[in-house]
Amino acid sequence: MKINHLRELKVGILAIICLVLLYFGFNFLKGFNIFSIVDHYYGVYPELNGLTEQAPVYIRGYKVGQVDDIRYDFTKDSSFVVSISINRDINLPMGTTMDLVADGLLGGSAIALSVPTGESTSFYEDNSLLPTQIIPGLVDNLQAGLLGNLDSTIVSAKSLIDNVKGQLADDHLKNSLANVDKLSSDLTVSSRALKDLMQNRVPVIVDNLDTAMANIEVLSHDLREADLKSTVARVDTAVDQVNILLAEARSTDGTLGMLLNDKSLYVNINSTVQSADSFLVDLKANPRRYVHFSLFGGKDKSDKAKKSK
Image 1 (cartoon, helix red, strand yellow):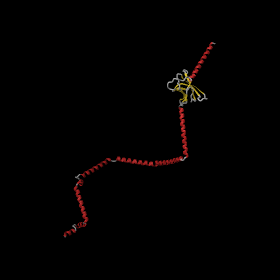
Image 2: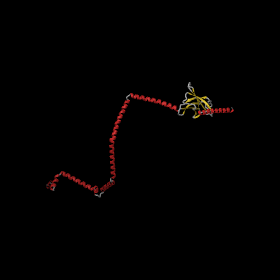
Image 3: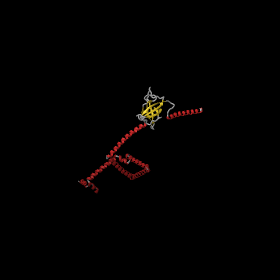
Image 4: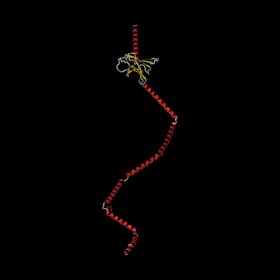
């Protein structure tokens, strides 16, 4: 009998141990630190924005605890009472607030303890009710901004629609469409003219350019083949001969030089010209004298009569 009672005692002790291990293991899996002593605080919120139990509690981004329990009473304005636990070695000075903040971009929420800076002599005790506030996250700000932009966009679209209605009511749209139609017709005519130019005129111009380029090439080839050296030599020879002729003209030894530089020749020629001029004047005044003289080879009868007297 004693052996049976001993076995039952062992089984009971083992069951108690298993229950204790199950309790601590369950709490450990829920995130409770079973090996540290914690303090509990409370906060009241009108809404939670996705806050759940085991959500983290931060102080300046450092995790110091978690959300233990959430109780709600929808008959009140602030329906939710949130209980948090943090390490007992952290003292919360007066003025600390429990801020409900966004935790990540997936819509989760967390509790951030906003601790005032500076030294403090008074602190919250365990199981104290802390003041709370809800801080919008990035997604909330984006939604608010998008809603504001959407409102302005709707207003702009409404104004645009009103302007279009006004244009449709007036004749401006009809005139604009008529102008567009005329512009399209002008573009069609211009396109046809351009097509005709490209098909008919441009090939002829290109052929003429090819012919001109060929002629220029032939001329360039002829210039390359021309005996420029002999031509230049002949020009030099002609220039030398002209220089020799000019030298002879300046010299008094040659015939051309004597004709150009002899003053007596000029005087004789001038005297001869004057005698010829006197002869022509006398011939014009007494033509009979020279006619009789040329026919009879003697002097004029008037001269003989003068002599007989």
